[in-house]
Length: 342
Image 1 (cartoon, helix red, strand yellow):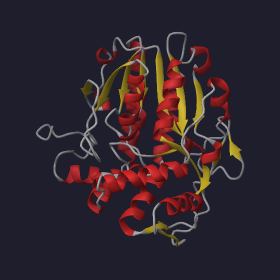
Image 2 (cartoon, helix red, strand yellow):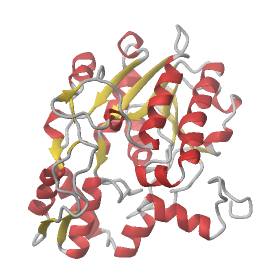
Image 3 (cartoon, helix red, strand yellow):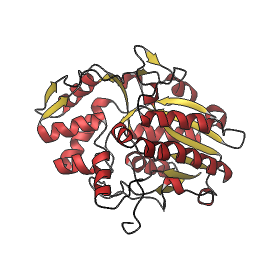
């Protein structure tokens, strides 16, 4: 297939593109370049790409593609809380506009990167795709709105699927340090301490970036009858862990690291365990990476590539990086590139 991947220069896109290419697909990227230079280790080899703000994508730019994989978003809760309107403009309105444009361009398949955080404070038990959606942040709320609005576009010529990814982890050449496992391993490497500020009791479902890529590949290649206008949780029940369990996995693989659960921020209301069996039944999909394996992978990469405190906290953490682009005059207040900077 000829595939367009939005956000191909992001954390997930940088991992996903080579996996799609290895499966024989012709991949083009679309990205505005916020995180293109946020690289740890050798420079990744990007596919041919379209440099454009998601809010400005045109129908003509989408003509000729068989599928759009939509990953691009302002991706984390602190950023969404700081600039909720921009989060909605990009993550919701621009995403729905992208889907409408894709349909108008004749694109048959539209794969949307949603999130298990749409379940919010789900309480005890495993939540399925039919569970009530209780998003607690602008980021999660924007995902719910996109699912609803894009589902309304579905027909015999346009087939969306909504992949609700568990919290991602694992190494990517374009690293993110502000997701739980990546963050805990980084602090353990840099400080010798695995430090948890909450009481450690909230549940989190986790999934490796490479497993997310494999899930998108499986959905894109699946018969349309199995994925048409359907939401699927992506992950593994084995990786439903408490924050304390995740932290212990880090302490187990980082030599000499001391585990400290301070409890100073109390209990996080975002707590949920997820049932991933629907995707497994529909497509036979199984994940490959455990949290412990991911922690070991990250430890090895951080050490071998010379991770520093500055790059960890500034370059690879979304909010400080975007703040630095705004402070330097590269981005304006609406999170658009200033022409001189581009």
